[in-house]
Image (cartoon, rainbow, N blue to C red):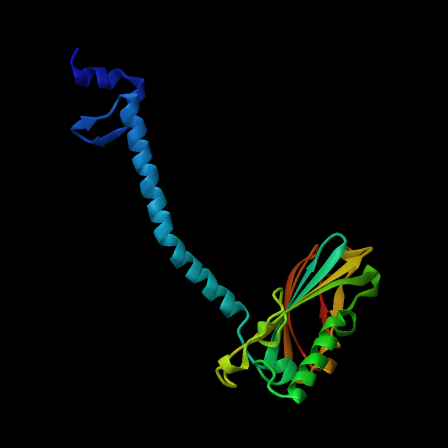
Length: 223
């Protein structure tokens, strides 16, 4: 029996070929080829990853575009918590998008931050859910809010046209979160520069989107 006949009847060789004239059937060769293919797959994935990340980043930017006067509000309703995530252009909250340069601007920022920390005054959840505000997290490096507590150096500002946001997360502990059907937004009264709120809700009743204006301040979901 010749070598080609042995290869044809050896079950270890099933489907493992590198061309029509050469067949690999010994275990070492099979393992070597598998390693080569694995390394090639990893290399292709590494090259593709930056493009995928760039694509995802572009999608996120499109979802929450930076527009003065327009803020985004995401609401997540879980079994015992309701979480609100607010993303707002800094200009819509304090009138500028950089570190404060004067004492008056610093006072304006401090007043806005104090209002933002009082989340239960900015967002009134459906009383049926029986919720209490438990945690507030504010992030805006431009005005010194964040885990590192460091703001931007005014010397590094790029003028009034540079963009800066404030991200706020409010966590409410609730006795019956699933019973909630709306949240009202006195946020409009606290910050007159806000013209509209792009709301998104993920609740047991489903997912909902709605845009609110200054005369329509209730974001509702379900029935």
